[in-house]
Image 1 (tube, rainbow, N blue to C red):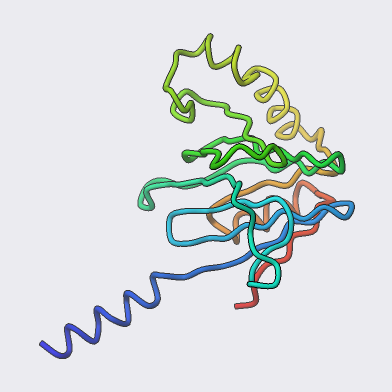
Image 2 (image 1 turned 120 degrees about the horizontal axis):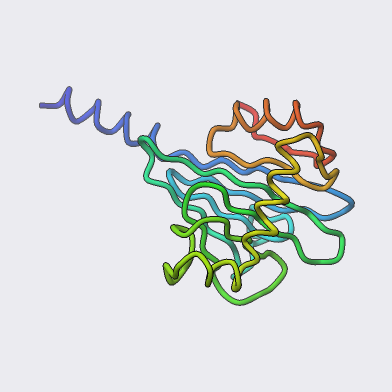
Length: 171
């Protein structure tokens, strides 16, 4: 019994990992905090009581097994940055407008409306053209690929040649 309890505690501690990643471009920082199957994006740099995270953020969530998070982050020096959702469920928490979501699929729609309404509300066709242009080699310096799989994210961004600097935690 004690052996099973010890194994459970070790697995629980290993599974509850929190990683902080920073994405920087032209003096703008987006903070990403990974907590299990939830990923939080904040405008600005945050990680401790001296620089706390804003109340407004974007939350990406995925079920874990046979699921994931995928998207693109476009950092603008205008004070507004955008995340284009490709996979996973993204939602905006609070109403601050420094970080916006561009939705690309019906399952990501907050009210699960039909395709024409999503296109009208969220500019879906513009985002598909934007993502398609990235896939065909027309990359933007201020865009970085996002994934729940960090090794995959690093590899893809190396291939795409982004100018956004990603600062990953040391393992």
